[in-house]
Structures are given as structure tokens and as C-alpha cells.
Length: 265
Image 1 (cartoon, rainbow, N blue to C red):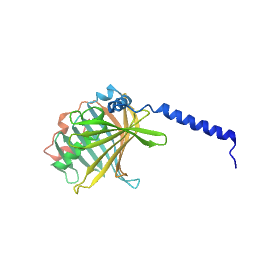
Image 2 (spheres, rainbow, N blue to C red):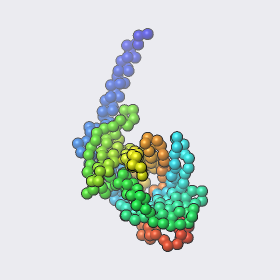
Image 3 (cartoon, rainbow, N blue to C red):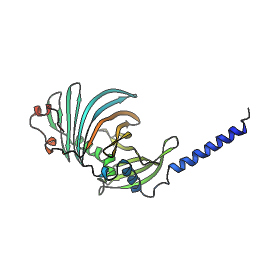
Image 4 (cartoon, rainbow, N blue to C red):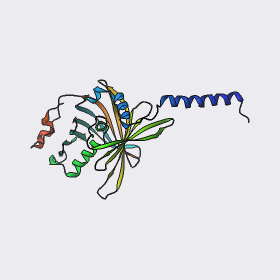
């Protein structure tokens, strides 16, 4: 059956309107990667975001498989930027603690009530996490260690594209970051890591559910995809900024019993 002329005209008008709307929403590609960062910082809170020195967050960390949660733990995470972090996990009534300060670190295994120093691999994993983090990029803590490049635009979803920038460190480690081309909202961070056998794995963090906290927008959901498969989810329940953090909480205690008490922050 021949399509009525009126319907054909309407479809054509809607198509053209969609094309015009898409062009209006997505500005021209930036001429420098710093412009992408500036838009993202603007979206996240501008100077308020840049002036954050500490972060205390609580929530749930879940391991995923085939689209379903297979286990989860509650967590308390305390960060003093740029390189101090203490994370307490609690699951099935047992507490585990991981603490890093610069190039040192220690862990507490609540199952055996044992404290030990982190090995080189664990410390390296911590630093890889910093180097591939959104905060490290946007706050410029990588400067002097690498360089930025604008990669181009990448399909995000129907009618949407992301601006992609690449941070390449002097030792060759690379991280790609994606931001919505129309709004500057942070979307993804992608890097490649190697296991003990030298095999490569892609690690992709996807940011979602941005919530405003004291004038700063925070992604309350961070999904990790490993080789394209959903492997974990961080679901924040609360985030606080610039609280005074006692230096003592990062020090390795001599007695495991000290760590049984809940951390008061």
C-alpha cells in the first residue's frame, strides 16, 4: 500500500527536526583535550569540586556475574587526596581493611585477625587505580607524568556521542576517558591491565546516577566491566567532603584487636 503523502511529510519533518536537534545539543568537537576537562569540571561543581581535599563515603560493593549479584559487602572508604586511602569492608560479620599511604600499605584480614604489609603487586594495583581515576584526571594530579590527546567522538547510545580523551603516562600506561559531548557528563574510564601470565584485560568503569552533595555532583553508581563483562558495582549511600581526617587512621597498628572497633569519622 502506498504511504499517504501527509504521513510521509510528517516523517520527513520529524527526521529533519531530530537531526537539527542533535546538532544543536552536541557542540562542535573541542580543539584541545583541556576543553573537555573544563566542561566536566564545570558540570561536577567547578571550584568546589577542585578544592576537595578529603572524601568519606559509605555504601555497598557487589561482585557481579551474568548480570546478577553473586556477593556483596558494605564499605567505609576514607580518602585524603592524592594518595592516602583506608577502606573497610564488612560482610558476613567479618571486617577486612585495606590501607595505602603513598608507596606503602597494609591489610587486616578479619577472618584470621592478622595484619600484614601489602606486597608490591597490591601497592601497584593501588597506584594503577589512582592513575586511571576520574579525580586524578580532572584535578590534574597526573601533570608532569604524562600527556593528553583528544581522540575524537565515539558512539554512546542512540543519537548520543561521547568526547574521548587519552591520558598517556611517560611509562606507556594509557587511560581513555569518555564524556557526553552535549553536556560534559563523565561517562567512562577505560584502561588495559596485565595479569601474572602477561595476558591483557580491559577494565572499564562506567559512571551513573549523579547526585549533588554540597554543590558537587557525585556518581553514586560505578560499574566495572572486565573484558566487556559486568564484574562489580560500587553503590554509594552517602558521601562527605573535606572532613578533618586523623592521620592516625592510616598508621599500621601493632595489635589487631585495635581494628575490631568501628572507625569513627
